Image (cartoon, rainbow, N blue to C red; front, side):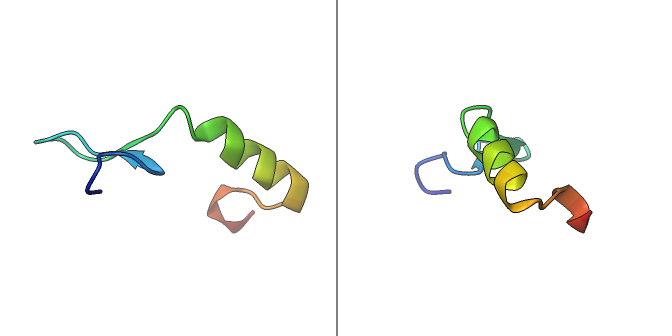
Length: 40
C-alpha cells in the first residue's frame, strides 16, 4: 500500500481497485493450479 501498487491500486481517497497489470499473472496462476476465485 505504501507505493500504491500490488494486487490492488490504492488511489488517495478511493477504494482499492484490482491492478490490471497483475490480473494476467493471477489468471495464469489460477489456470495452472486449478484454483478459481471464491474457492471454486
